[in-house]
Image 1 (cartoon, rainbow, N blue to C red):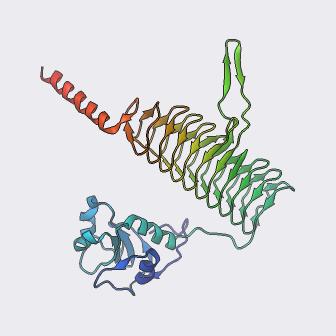
Image 2: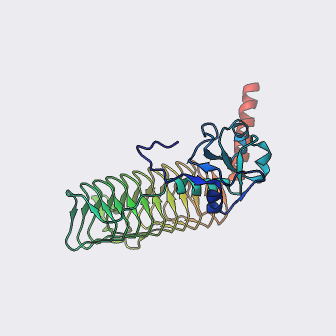
Image 3: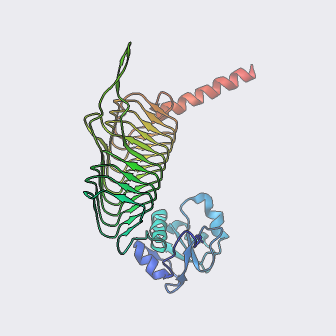
Length: 342
């Protein structure tokens, strides 16, 4: 059960309400009137809580669960203990996410709440039902949509636009940027910093003015302490629904498509293009001026130094098609075993 000091539970709900909420079906013998008070893990859930199974590795935990209800695929229904009510769906993890959101919805204000220490320029506009916390600074001509939440010490620089129902975490800074609706920006994020561009001359480096912006779509999430540089002339663009993990660096002029996933400690160098649905594993990197096609998958710690066609999966340094990489790994192991045996 989530700690009530930090999370507000909106329950309880009947099992039928939860099932209808996710558009699933109840198994035969399930109790639609069962009152569910919370979500929990298979190991820890109680008889008035609901859990889920999404990975067959945890079937043994399902067999021992004390949960009153469980969300799972129909093929695992026979593994559940007798008496456990079941919500059946071919997407149990998604169903669990929706049910957990129902129990723990985002809290929105019913009127503006602006802390006395916040500084908001007279030319800025703040929409209805916004929460502006202590130490926030909102610059000239800033536009903030309704339902936004700005945590302590957030700085929104002059001219920026923030869409509706967007939250920005503590100590984050936003400059030279337009941001869409329903975004979640975590603590310490830096958006719109100067791009890393300069002319390299023997007598010294000459900075190139970075005259672009950062354009962020709707439903984008940016993890803690990540940085997104503004463009040098063209804009840096983050597409709708993209998820960026903690400690990620996005260089100037980068174009990222919709619903991409970029995992922690990864980096994308300037002027590279990621098509829609690209996935970058942890600590992977993309060199500058590289194009990743739609649906490309980059394994953790891979280093991409040339274009990758749509739909390919790559691994290694330098990155290569993943099947080639694993063939090389098998060869290396064979050679190593041969040397050990000689």
